[in-house]
Image (tube, rainbow, N blue to C red):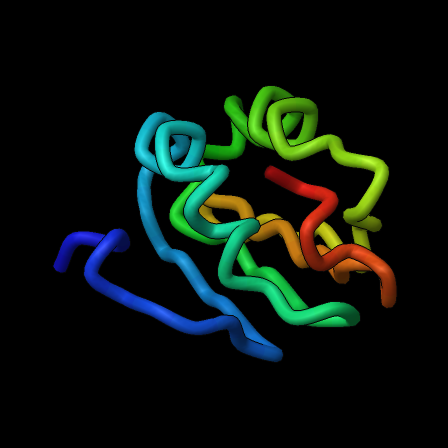
Length: 88
């Protein structure tokens, strides 16, 4: 499904995709976050976690958790309460 076809904003957004795809759709993911929402990114090769974390570095996002399992990683972010409209 094309992320552009999904409208609205949400309290939780989960994307289990390869690092390159996550980086490509970053802006679309951030546009769908409510203030204070959680963004969970998974399906990231452990060797690319640092790159994805850096790519998603935004003043409006805080890393809540970072986990690894069997060579794969997950990043969990929370948007700031005032984040809506700041991440475009």
